[in-house]
Length: 343
Image (tube, rainbow, N blue to C red; front, side, top):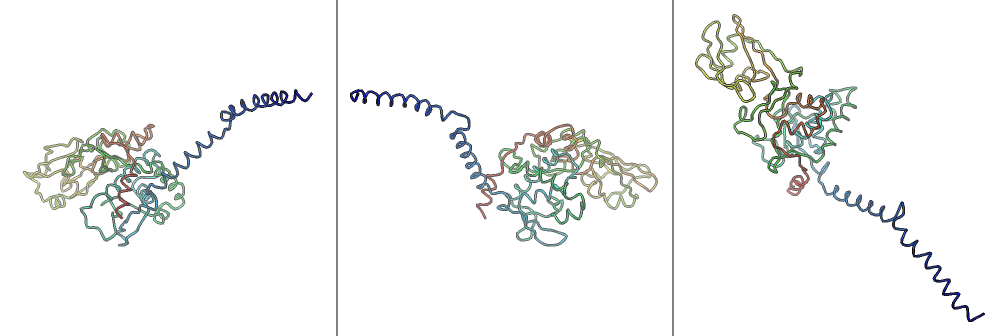
């Protein structure tokens, strides 16, 4: 019997191998396998590491000079953007319109960080908190303003800001001048109609949604004496005011001849405090009545137009692409890294 023992042992070993080898081959491909989970964990670790290197949140701060209080307030970047969006656009607006506003606000401040402002700012300040730059209010001010509506309004604004986090608008690789205004006359305006330079992405486009804006129509009334004094003109007779001699690409008043003196529509708007350079007027005795269409300078993104587009189902990307011609949505990470490195 003993001479058969080696044969029996060998047979047993071969039988065991035939059982073990297939099991080893199958294990890596079974459901809930180790290698799949390991891959997911590695991806998460890599993503977290990348995010930690992006200088966002408290790492980037904005020095805001509060003109009314005459003091400097230092605010984390994304909190500043939330304060601007909450101050510049009604929180009742569509979410996609609020996202477009957040994108414009972030682009503005990143561009401001990269370039020296032509205005003299107090030490440590990057921007003023008014329309000189962008209107900004902090949480305490918004709580006072919104009262019981603060929670839902601020949550909505912050969601829009978070959804666009790290995104800015660029043209040829640089942040754009992301100008915006309330309501157009049905068309936005070419930049050169208001400012000295022609900007390729700030061109007149149709904005039909503005016709429904509650701020579309405006009216101002002046005496003849007030009108003449403010504009430095002398009206010719009891029935004539002036003749429009040139219009802009956005169908606003470019130039008016008033008794031989040519005055720009821009100057008329500023000196008379009109809502728009799209105006008509009539003289009734000693009174001049001026009717306007639109509210604001008209260059860039119309806020009420953005809301109209959003209500029709357009995304924030479609909105900004309409009002800022030929721009790209890019990440601000590299630019912010350069800004941080300089500090």
